[in-house]
Length: 255
Image 1: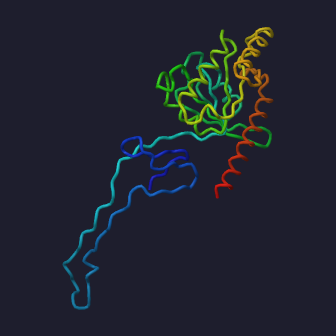
Image 2: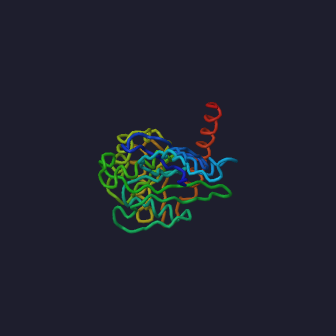
């Protein structure tokens, strides 16, 4: 028996055919049947043959090569360009301790953290930075886009200190659409980050520009200083609970 974490996908030897998707805790599946052990000489022992010399071989069990691919399951997925402040946001608001530095692709592995909001909590995943062409494998590419599929909703962080926040937003959204898997249809909250290093005039100008391109309310935050973070966490909690309720209701309808 092989124990695997929830979210593991098992593919056939061609690495394309999906055999099973382990999305539930305790889920079990038989990939290969065991062999027949056969009969030893004791099986043929009788009242007239006390020491039989006969033994029958069994049949071998099944063998197969499989590929295991883990896709993290989280309530909220953090997306954005490299250095958008995702790791800082996750470490400041959860028990996760990702590596943080001021250069692109600091995060080389997706990370999970539990975020508490009052007496409630949700799981947040830090998805390593996306760049243009990520859906084709550029940068860290498709190694991490697949993890976004498992998230109920997205928090899109945009670095407010860069020149063109609208272009930064469009780049990530284009990669989500190009990857497919309904990533672009997931519910999304947008936040302008690193505002502690910006002037009030610059914050307002870039917030307005980002709101126009995203057509969403833009949360103004500083993950480092904690400005505007708590209201955003409450909005994320509301979004998570709404998505959980929707998932539970759809499950009842399917049953």
